Structure formats: structure tokens, C-alpha cells
Length: 356
Image 1 (tube, one colour):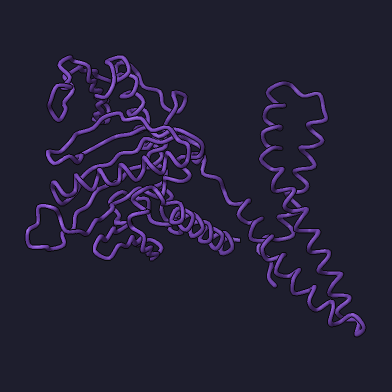
Image 2 (image 1 turned 45 degrees about the vertical axis):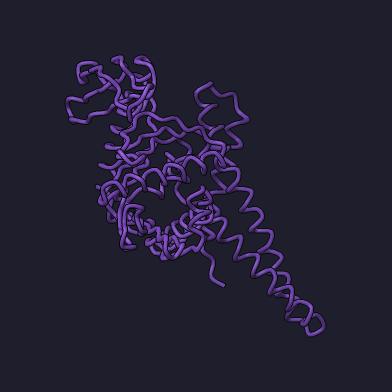
């Protein structure tokens, strides 16, 4: 069998881990202690996996020696097969641990849903997607907060922006960015014809104050009356906040809370969009090196179709179809997310092997 992770690379990792162990036994300054402790903690799971890998490799070597002995050939043959299978699994698991980490994976996100082609039907589809992500967030024990929304006349949303906070939110939801297409018969369609509508989803890793510095001179803040669908709960005070970032022209609005909370939420969204702008610029510079990624990450890319007559969901990036649309729209999306993560990891491993 061919080994994915080279012995030379394994030895370099072991040597560096031993170096870190030795450093942590010295009298270090506080800054050095924090630095080496963090690196040690990150490398420890890889070190432990290497030890497990080496143990199985040694056992395989011993089993192969027994296989050459006619007296133990049959017994050793079964053992060799089992150990080779275990070694392949360990090799792949080690390679996954060695893949570069996405620094944003553990961040919360700003989720932006917008109706695309299809008018009122597209706005209703945004409501479906909103419910799907809210229920998935509930299953994942994440907190969802609405920042701003623009309702449509038939009960959907032309646009809605949410904050989703919790553990590893971006690592799961980052594969949702793109164009989501729905095929179904609208309630207003008397002829029973299937219509196609679309909505765009943008998942932005939430920025912290240390990530983006915004000068007061670079923004203009306006207050205005919150818009709503009408009725006795229409906001009659100027509590909505609009912030314009003058250098980029980015405009954000928060209209769900008090004026003070809206200002904080709007700044949060602005900071996140500026952070995303910075990330996108960096990614464009290395786009050719990221062709192995599942999808391009381009929010104009059609990534998924929800077909109601057939009860199916198809993800076009990995050509994977599920025939349980109702469950999917009720938040049962983990199976597809796992498939997308696995496909992404497999392609990155293949790329690493080609570049080795």
C-alpha cells in the first residue's frame, strides 16, 4: 500500500513536538509560554495520531514476517489484511489532521438571505430557507438573532439578515453560500405549472473589533422609521439605524431593536462585511490554488435545487440528491453538510498529494 503522509514529514512533526515539550519545561516568559502552549495543544492530537499510526505500522511489519513462516502463514495472512485496512484508515485520518485549518471555522456568522428571480414566490422561498436555518440552528444549540428584514406582501421576505452565534457555526454553514433554486407550483398558479424561483444565501464569518478598524470619519449614521408589514405593531419612532461606510459605499441597516441596539447590530454587520471584503480580496489572489474547493464560494454560483413535485434536494457541486425535501426544509440538513465537508477534505488531500 502507498502511504499518503511521508515518513520524512512524520519525523519533522515528531521532532517539533519534542522541541515544544522541552521548551515548556523551561522557565519561559508569559508571552512565550502562551505561544508555545497554544502550538503544543494544536500539535498534540497529530502527535497522538502519529504514535497510533506507527504502532499499527510496526504490528503490520511483524505480521508480514510471520506470513513468511509456513507454519503461521494462514493466521498471519488474515492479520496482515486487517492491519493494512487499519493503516489506510489511520493514514487518511492523519492527513485530515494535517490539512490547513480555516481560521474562520470557529466563528459565528452573519447570514444574509435575499429573494432573486421569481418575485413573490422567491420571497416565500426565502421564508422557507429562513425556517430551515432557524431549525438547524436550534438543533445545533446556536443562537439566532434577527438584524433586519424586508417583508413581502404575501408573507415572505425580500431580504432578511440574521446573526447566528455558537460553536463552529461558520465551519458548518460556509457551504451554504450561493444561489438556491426552487421548483414548485405557486399557490397563485391556476394552471398547475411548475415555476422556478431563486434566492441567494451569503454566509459571512462574523468579524470582531480587533479584525477591522473603522474610523468615525469613515461612516455616516442616519436614523429612520422602521418599516413593517403594517398593523398595530408598526414602529412609529425613528429607531432604525442606517450606517454608510463612505470609502466603500457599503450600506447596512438594522431595524429590529431599540436605536442603541440597532446601532450596535449595524456596526457588527458593517464590520463583518468589511472583513469579508478583505477575505474575498485575498481569496481572489489565490483563486487558482483553490480550485479544489467544493464550489467556488462565489455567491452567484447555483449550488442547490429544491424540487417540490419530486420531493428532492440536489446539490450540484457534488451531484448528490436526497429524496426527503420536507425533512430537509425542517432543518435536517446535517447529512448533506457532512457530504460537502467530506468532499472538500478529499479534494484537498488529493491536491496536497499532487503538490507533495
